[in-house]
Amino acid sequence: MASLPGATLWNAFKSTADSQPEEQPLLPMMQKLMVQMNRINTGIYMQDYRLIDTTAHNIAHHPKIARSQMKKIKKVLGSEIKKFVYYDLQMVHSHADSMSMAARRENMQQVLEHYEIVQRGCVNCHVDFRTELREVLHPDQE
Image (cartoon, rainbow, N blue to C red; front, side, top):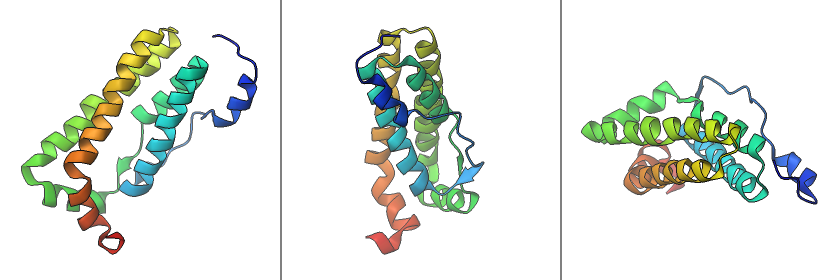
């Protein structure tokens, strides 16, 4: 890993092998995932492969959506739940795990390829489902 002047400043952003809850409501989970994506972005610019590895691992193993909310999500999405699950499992989990492995090999090109897919999965899910899910899960925030 390259050592840049002031790189220790970024140690404050390093995520550890966080003990994550088994389940979590969707909104705080998404907020934490946004912070984690920003940490990976920092890791990319700082060439901090450990930060990328640890944070990508945390994204790949994020908590499940709280059961009570998952029931509502399945109901409102109907057959579209397959696309929702695809974004989460195939695009986010799978490629975050691959990004973590690429970071362990210090292969920035592969890190970037997997980062882009994870980011696309997140954004696609938001574009396709955010408004609908917000109306159901957080009607008071309209």
